[in-house]
Amino acid sequence: MNIFGKVIKRFVFRPPVVLALALLLSTVSACQQKAQRPAETGLASFYSTSFEGRITSSGTKFSNSKFTAAHRTLPFGTQVKVTNLENGKSVMVTITDRGPFIAGRIIDLSQAAATTLDFMDSGIVEVRLEVVSKE
Image 1 (cartoon, rainbow, N blue to C red):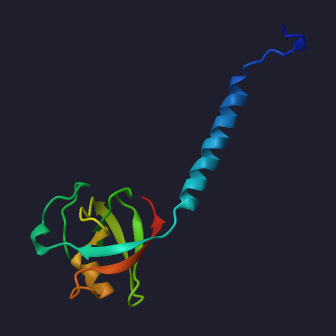
Image 2 (image 1 turned 180 degrees about the vertical axis):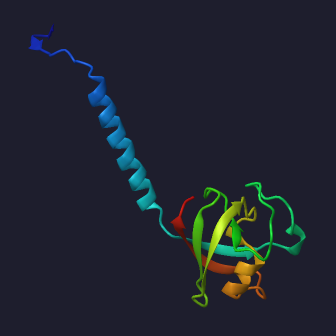
């Protein structure tokens, strides 16, 4: 093909090559997204006893004696390490619900998790969240 005196080769569509390239790019993109998720810091609070036995957003029954939590965006089943930045104590929780819905808070914990982190008396505490695994 000749456009303005330049010869341009015609593009030949090769499905196997295009498919392999698309698969490679999506795999690299997925790996980068997982690796790029930094630790999140902010305020944590805990569930009231009035939520005991209610159904969570994930469809499971809530229990303050289990190590569970609510987060606005992490997928249900995600394992998160929560560290109390005031005393260094940590706990592993599973995301089973959505929330918290109070500005400035990044996670709502069960009372079992809050007790382990030692902030039941204060009600809220500064924490760091680290995603450990996704189910």
